[in-house]
Length: 384
Image (cartoon, rainbow, N blue to C red):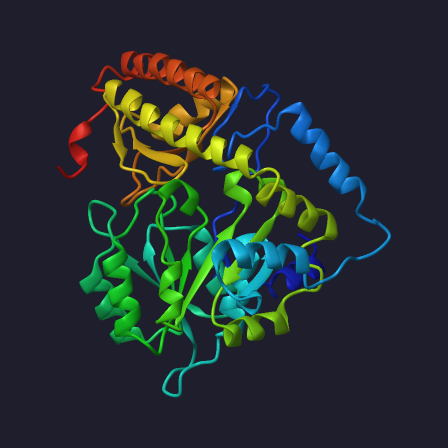
């Protein structure tokens, strides 16, 4: 590397090396089942797509649009039964998590750095938000069943005194839906800590903590349209106390939600609502079928309340993932030392996609078993 470039690279903050790079690999094999990004397999009927096209064609592209997104704000506020001033919009939920980490990054009087606490394993974006804001991340292990350990969480909060606690409910990548009571008690027990509850998979869990905003001002709900059919829109939103929202608005990039995306989001929430509800119901049914089918193959699957399932295969999960990719079937590889050893995360796709996946897994694990001449699965690693 030339000397000048090496000097420049020395300016990169070293703690960012702890962030995993996203797998953006693309091959020449045609994708027949895209099950790696937790998207909804919703495809609009031709008449619905035409209606959306008419809505988008009316957006004046030569104008930025209203940065306050008034129509989308009013639609969501009515739907959620909150005040418009309680909403902040961003370019997906990731941006909003980073805004929260940036805004609430002032060290406490007795600390050199602010801290953000979250359980582990969980959504990688939590750690990314902390490190990008220059805040110290604090990770608290989940228990063996991937459930939240309330005693460990409480002790860690008392010991480290974080500014923020991030919780993903249902959790990504495990699909676990942590107890409302457990989370509520933590929030109430630590009124000087802000709890950001990531509910981007709420539609599939049919469970929310939004109602806690009425009595617990130290809670923030983070959601997105990405998981219910609007992944390309990149529309995320926060629901919180108006004073918290006002602080986020100070640092939110202007026009974070484009006029086109805001118009499409309004259509999805209103005229497209039936399509979304139908797609969500289909995914829930297919999630149950996928879980049962994987179990029939001798694989262990963590109970999921999201639009994905986490399975464990101890016969070479990374190799299985690679072979599936060669067949044009994309799943997410979480196989690494620790609690996610042997784990793959599978998005619940369409029936056709899942049929292709299940056929491929059944074939490949037989091949791997033959090649290794050892038991290809070990279902005993999950707690009973």
